[in-house]
Image (cartoon, rainbow, N blue to C red; front, top):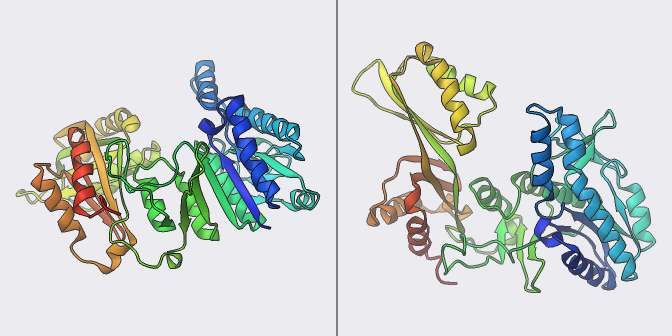
Amino acid sequence: MARIVMKFGGTSVADLDRIRNAAMRVKAEVDEGHEVAVVVSAMAGVTNNMVDLVHDAAVLADLREYDVIVSSGEQVTAGLLAIVLQDLGVSARSWLGWQIPIRCDDAHGSARIEEIAVDEMERRFAEGQVAVVAGFQGVDAQGRIATLGRGGSDTSAVALAASLDAQRCDIYTDVDGVYTTDPRIVAKARKLDKITYEEMLEMASQGAKVLQTRSVEMAMKHHVRIQVRSSFADSPGTLVVDEEEIVEQAVVSGIAYSRDEAKITLLRVLDHPGIAANIFGPLADASINVDMIVQNISAETDRTDLTFTVSKSDLERAEEVLRRSQGELGFDQLLADPNVVKVSVIGVGMRSHAGVAQQMFKALADRGINIQVISTSEIKVSVLIAEEYTELALRGLHTAYGLDTA
């Protein structure tokens, strides 16, 4: 007998038929004798509708009331799944964030979990009851509902698994695992049996949509084994585990990409101490996240060019912030380009192998793809290229690193 947390995403509970399918999967684990907690998202599209309603109601809504509204979808799903399980003869009850409670800080809209009280849930496990938990939500110190940010149900599930000391956290979604790259673009993409926390964290942060970044961070911190599985197929999924669990690491495990990138170049910026702080400080104050940064060497000793990326949704605001400060910053011209994509090769094997970046650059050059910006970490090399070359780059790199063959 094991203790398992099962999480079902929005597409897995999109309607009653899919909720019944999820319930059958829960019942199968119960019939095996396992203690089960289930974390559910809102039905597909419901949270987006709630967000739209809030934005229609007010341009700058009170985030505490925003959380009340957008958390309602998970409440409906939890209640429906509990009812369906009861109809199948499985003892079950729904739990909302404040009922457990899942205690969070007061950063409404993107709250962080501080503690989960699981004593009562564990007592009910001993009685054979399944806990159906509304994901994405908790309660702050003032007793107000707080949500964890988009995709937060993954974080709810991993945090609950850590608090319950569960043997595994199964994330059920509309894909059957983690692939070497996007199989919709690269037909030869392969499903991975296992991937390390670090690799999955890089994949998630660089554009892969399988798991939310914060959930992977939490799993790595608390050593929660995650399995990404399909809600609609019975094939084994992908395990996200400690590096020690993987006997032999490939140099590159996967290739991720993100279309949510926009490039800004400031031409002939004054080149003296403090100018970078003057540029990026106002962007930070405007809550605009900057990703890749490169400073170009100029023939002029007192001038330089600076290129960096922001998310596409922040591009317009970033331009406005920078143009307001143009006189103070002393740049001649601002060039913006939203038609770029970031491509990243990822693998813990890079630590012990040289030439990974050179192999990437050569593969792109052989296909006539120009690299605009480069950034690296210990297990990742990322490049910014023109968006029109996305598919060509992914297919070429997948082949170059030997990922086409098992």
